[in-house]
Length: 253
Image (tube, rainbow, N blue to C red; front, side):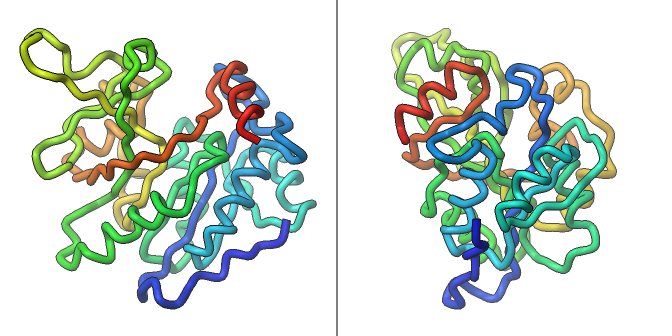
């Protein structure tokens, strides 16, 4: 697992790192990151795919699991141990607190097939944000199947007219009360790009009531007045939340 992640110099002067938060004891699918996908584990596949984008100055896994730490490091990858955390953002904040960087990209360990283009789009949000108005950016993809819209494992997002997130929910949003207009539904893909200062601030804030209710960490940002720019992508991957998702992912290999 060679770290091939030398960043292309043409991509700007911001120092950008990617961190993959990873915990072993996922509530819905314990040990999912150590399941075999192709000839590697899920977490190793995710790590290698992020490295090979060559978008980042550094890529590493942040985990509280010695099993995952050993899996990455024994194969030549980079990993750091953290304490136990409720959210990936909190874990990443601990991992990068002493690092010098401008932008931190959070790639979920259970999103093994994320491609270069959507990550590049997130980076471009900050390269174009000269006034530093945007705290973080994330991805969304349109949902077209009714069962996908109604699935609570799919976090839905609604945005304002400028593309900033208004709310995230496991429920169906917007509710289609008026049937004479076409409704569009978007799934939030759990990939975040943060300004480091926004990430640091996040880690000092208490979990918020809506965040606790929905079990969606992005809501903490909204409840504390931070702006989240949503980028629409047509990327279709498989986030591995339950065993059935792993089977879907194996069919893509």
